[in-house]
Image: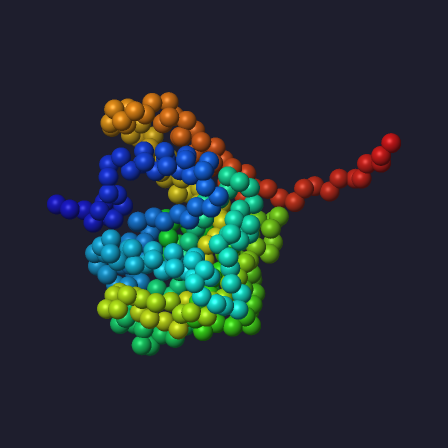
Length: 282
């Protein structure tokens, strides 16, 4: 008997190994990484689009809206375009802390589209909701270091400024002490395009958020736990050894992810440096 919960989570038994090993490489060889999690996107499809058993086609169409928003400034004009190189400049406070959460709003089915015309404030609030995150973690458990909001369609700067001011007053949206502003906004006049006859409704305006939040450590903790269960028994390791890997590479990658979890913990705990009395130069 098939278990839909299992089907949405994993495509391979060795997924925890692959995730840990690939993250180890991504730490060293990339500047910005956007995390996407099948389970989180599956839940969004079920909840927001009323798809009982989402397929990879459904998941990929939602992911494509994120990718399209990230690259829209390369293709279209806007009031305040965000260049791809600016993601690293504005979102990465330290080289290792470069794993981003992503969210998108509105995610509306065709059936609901006719009686929903969401304002800029509503879609902005939507991308901060835990259920909108495309990786399975709760941003309320962490603190934001920075976030980039990319608006598309019928949006003007005045409405964006008002929406951001409103978000700053929310108690659930916490920023680290050392980065109190933390917002980068972009506006692109081209509204999002959807696949004709697909699940997503065509909308006048949308927003995609890429954010750096310490809660992303929850994603790594979950992967590490699954890795540990299998690696304790050295289950399936022989397949990797047979392909030319060494067992030490597993331990090295796992230790690197433990260090990454601690890095995020320390970044979230950091406060302004204590004021010290000025010392006289002699």
